[in-house]
Amino acid sequence: MTSPRTIHALQGWSSVAKWTVFGPVACMVIALVYNAIAFADLGPEALRRSLLSATILPALVASPLFFYFSVRLRNLAITNRRLGLVARTDSLTSCLNRGAFTARVETVLDGEAALEAGALLMIDADNFKAINDLFGHDAGDEALTILSRSIRSVLRAGDLIGRMGGEEFAVFLPRVDQKNAEAIAERIRRVVQLAQFAPRGQAYPLTVSIGGAVFNNRTSFAELFRIADQRLYGAKHSGRNQAVIVHALDHPSIALRKTA
Image (cartoon, rainbow, N blue to C red):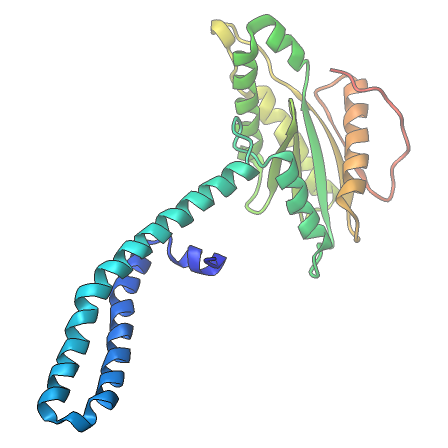
């Protein structure tokens, strides 16, 4: 089986060229060394011919073979990479899907160089069912793409965004304190509210409710998710179109039913 490192190396045309050149050269060197030893005692003419064949045959036979197989491996690597991307990505919004997002955040939190601070935001579109009911599911899909683009426009390099299902998104913010997390959440809320959404030519406002959990010590995704999801329900319960961000070590326990 081709190793991931080899597959990655074969993804560029430059690597195909290298394999096409250096593969036959390696075969040629091996053939020359072998023939020089094997035909050394058969006289100068036999040695000359054997060395000549050891030079020509690898060039004629190995070059097209190395080119063919390196191109095939390159195409396989590209296909595998695309399939891996599809498996990790939500097809509608191009965000990480729930499983991929959860795994990425858990890797960051559980790694040897675990983050000392950060935040998890849970973001839910307000009154989303009304969009589907009034304008149809195509309009709902358009709204989701607008939401994902709007959220991305606020995020920094290294931040993660995932679609957790339906109209719910999650954002992981590494290396932020509560003040910065609140500022980013508020920017997300505002940019969504300013987004233009006009199904069937009729302007329709988009808003989101946001719940967040900030941490500055070792924690788990499950704990952050639980707290952020509770704050999201709290934001919905308090009137929607707002952000509620708390510290993971300092949050009251609430039990609210989710509101659409």
